[in-house]
Structures are given as structure tokens and as C-alpha cells.
Image 1 (spheres, rainbow, N blue to C red):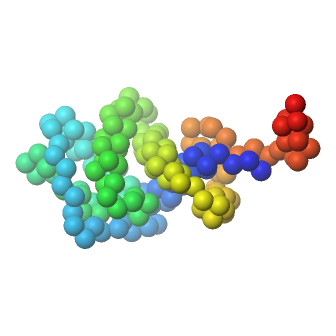
Image 2: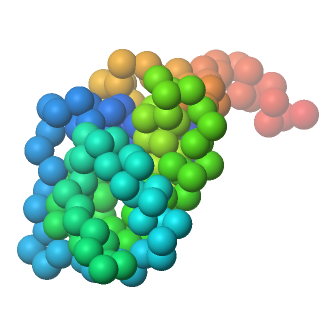
Image 3: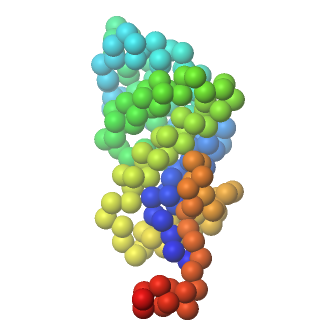
Length: 165
């Protein structure tokens, strides 16, 4: 089995966030809320998608051009709240024309892709093993939300043949 770490992490984060957005995981309250300045257009996007943001595990409040984030999904690394909110707003803006039923999944998939890219830096053997265990627990293991394969099976003979040429 050859695993694509970013693709595997993308699938794992997607399913974790989707589970959280279905109410199975309580958001993680921040000890110190994060304040992010937002202009009028970003505020409009946030207000339009307020229900989706809350269902994804965020607790936010907008007042006088400042977005206050007081809780986030547990998959977000402390200190990355501002970057994640920026990515979330970007994703919501880009999928504005998507059918209503797929908007949520599309935004979550974009967010999962961003988490995955950051999560695999400095991959250790232990982290790789944990990644494979987590992938096996996913409902869908063989591809990312965007359809890219998360792993492929290659026999030792095939691997030897490919590397011997």
C-alpha cells in the first residue's frame, strides 16, 4: 500500500469536520478569543453563511468590523484560527454559485484540503502509521472529497519491476 499523505489527511479532516458539523463533536472554546478585522464584503459573506459556520463548529460574533472567534472545531491547530477563517471566507466566496445542497460539503472539502497541506509537514513514521489508522476508520477511504486517490496498492513484484527499469 502506497499512501498519499496529503490526500489521506484531506479525507480524514473532511470526515472529521463533517461529523462536527452534524453536531457529533462540541466546538473547542478558545481561552482567548481571536479578533479579526473584516471589511463590508467579508462581513456580508460571513452573515450569509452564518448557519453553516456555526454548524461547522465555530462560534463567532461580528461587531463594528471585527469578527470575534470564541470557539473552533477541534481539528484546528491553536494559532491558526485567523488563517482558517480567511480560508473559510475564500471558500464561501468561491462556491457561492454551487447548488445549495453541495455548498456545505464543498466548503468543508476546501477547508480539509488546507488543513491537510499544513498537517503533513515533518511527517514521521509514527505520524504516518497514525494517518493510515485514521484513514481506515473513514467511511470512504479510497479518495479525497474531490476524487483524488488516497492510496494505491502495489505488489512487491510490481514495485520491483518499476524500480528495476
